[in-house]
Image (cartoon, rainbow, N blue to C red; front, top):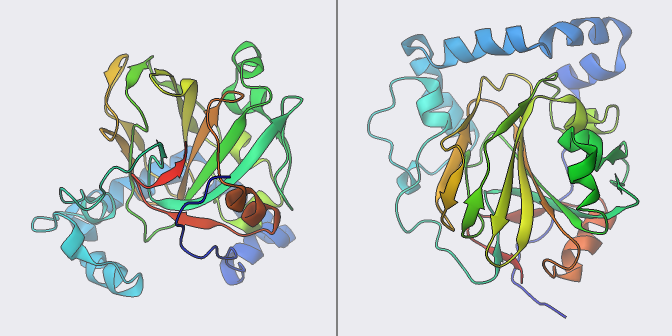
Length: 280
């Protein structure tokens, strides 16, 4: 049995206020249709990438207890420069085995008969997630690792192994929040805009990494098209908003600690950092 050192698992926040109004009120759901559109996201993203947004940075850093000493932070020209800040060398060392591709709150699930069955959430099919039924069949019996990024997290993501990648495939969709209040109402990961990459890795075989956009995320910015990849190399970044990275592994490609599955069954999320070992 694998035993790794994880931080204490935490319960997702209880969403109230504006989000509860949007997802549980009839008038709020009408407004929600506007807010989850890509047009509104693009407008928000344009503002947050402009110099006009620079005044938001200090309050954002203070309210979210972000330690900028871990990041290159001398020349933020707009809010999004701060949000997708680049981490300093050595702050995310690469451990052994299967590593997390990003900072976030991790949940893990088995794929059974082509379905992912999250606890207290809407089930969804891998075929819908990938928009590719043939590719989805290759992952039956495998694992789904869901890394939920909150606004305070480091918002760049990396390759979890050496190998070769194909081109990035963008799948159009809506932009729901990825917070629990939406996950319980909609199959968010199969409805939201997302970008997926098929990778042939050296140690874990064929894998797919999917970056899922969320409400007011202006952009999913992947850095490379097809070609060789290096473990720990930066793959891309999210601009403003809570976001999610989903990693699909084939059957028997990796062994994960039972602790991660038990936390997920209890409705808890396990905090992880990019480069941290999460399996073998």
